Amino acid sequence: MKCHCRVWLTGLLFVSAEAAAFDGDTTLDDVNLKPENWLDIQAYSFRKSLDQQWNDGHDGFRFTGGSLNIDYLFVRTELRYRQALSEQLDMRLGWEEERFYAAEDYEHPYAELAYHPDALPLEFSFLGRSGYAKSGADFGGAVSLGRRPWNYVRLVGYAEESLYNDKNDADGSYYEREPNTIRLEGAYQLFGERLVTRFQLERNTPLEFVEEDGASTFRHDGSRYRAFLDYVPGDGHLYGITYRGFREEKSIAEPGSRRSQSLRYDGMGLYWQYTGRPDYELNLGVRVDRLENTLRERADGASGKDYRITTPQVYGVLTRWYAPRQGWELGTYLGRTWESTELRPSGETFDETTNQGKLRTSWMYRSLDGRSNLMLHFTFNLDDLARDPGDGAGMTYQGVF
Image 1 (cartoon, rainbow, N blue to C red):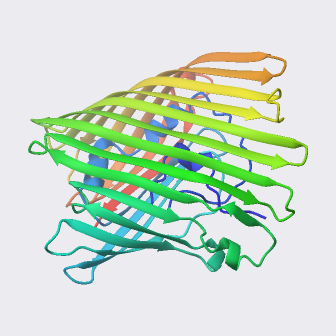
Image 2: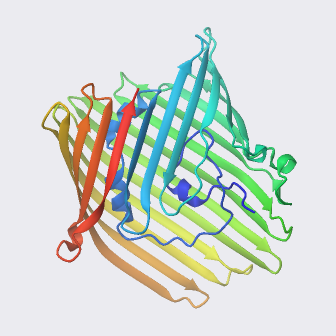
């Protein structure tokens, strides 16, 4: 039996669709990253100007993906569409998925019916997502002060699989405590758009899921948060800071045993962007990522593993449009990774420190109005060019309607 419980993998990279909370895995994950993976993720992420274009609109589709230099890809996909039914009613469709470490089943898109009265700066929404089985349906609501995409604050509440206990006819599994998600988000442009911020705080309430045999109980709770703050003084300059993190607590209780996992991630970045010329863009930044994974295999906590990985990095990206539709981009990423694994109860420790370097070359093609952008990436190992020069490839596309 597989309940729909989102594992840390999507939490790590912060899926933020309206219905994001749980998606189908009640296992505990032995997390071991490659030393260069944080550089990979930064290299394939959307550059700041694309994020700005995306945040300014309601409708669009974008995806990015690239090799993580292991058997998996970093993949991120987003779709959002809004259709006005009247001056007070909007219908929205949204979908966002992010894959980093393992394959998972994809979620269905969410639908939203939003009502905003003319006389008040408020918006009320009904949210829903379902598949063929009613037991997997999610329902929720939201209230906003202000109107998206900017200058609003929004409170969202979601009941995950609220019909599971009544509609599950596949086996005898059930929720002892049903999962719910509460999220506070907002975005503001202040002081003549010189100060720009966007934030999201999400809490997954504790859940208890009893497997079909009645002897195994899975428990989970967690929280996620992310925010950025940009200062835009003018003349094409932008200075910003970003922070993102999550906490996850999972456990499986069985007769005579209890296994648990505690995950913690923190990531912070500082960046500068220059877009003062129409045919050039320059991005410079520093970023630090830290992940801790604590596994315990016995109820007394004596057996298990503590894993930690920390990577600070600096990067620079130069974008050059040499024709109305075509351009190239060159990115350099340099970092240092500390990895530590401690086995319990022996106390045996494995530590490794490595220098990491990555070069990304990209060819770009865009529509004349700049609303659709395609990028093809090829990357190289700067830390081992002689023996292992190739580091993979990827593709990025963004289109706003």
